[in-house]
Image (cartoon, rainbow, N blue to C red; front, side, top):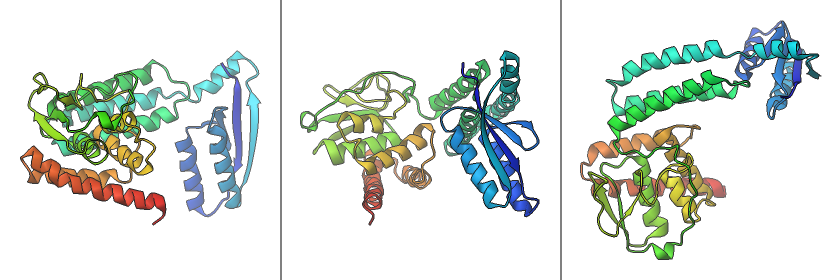
Length: 319
């Protein structure tokens, strides 16, 4: 256990008040502990020094004073006192109370509203975990409760949704060996299945045939399954199916595809926010409402992914 700490000693300018409010908010967001008024503490961990450096620069630019120090607890008792400044139990309790309240709301929520609510809960927990420097069983309990709620919602909205916690190695494959194949996935495809079909058709198989399964138990003979448990291509180590297929076929070096994958990942299972996700989700949801036939839905979505990929590629190239 490291006993090294970072301290930031601040004297804030008396005015303008907006500067003081902004700095107070930044201090709170950093998760630092307050030793006393104007003296703040963070554990000496990667990234924490940069947080204090940025805060110190902002204070100085606003006309205040800021000094960064490095120190160690003098003994075990003081180490415990320092760590107590970072007790997040009240924050986790508030999250669990909110989670219980939202669980009731999700019972009657539409899929669109429910997925939005799940992403909000995920972002809230991610933010809490990012400043939980001494995580304990409560952090594990909160994460488990959220994952159980997500699984229950997926079972209702999207039966057969792959489990994101599956571990394994992504096998390298050659596109030449996957031509004129039948690709099978669950019916009424959502964004990961549609994006994966687009990726297959545009970058892997020159003449694919897609089959939409009401039940994944009965697979067409010779078909390649994707985006369900036990499929040839599905979620692995936190990657959604689109990302797994891109990696498997050596396409993950394409920056535009990587960005598109981030949007698909965020829409499908949450995680780090993506600038493109909101617009893509709205478009796919609109296409779902317009097309009851899954082949027609895929056909309409192809131009959406074509346009998004072209825009991301032009952005990458500086166009």
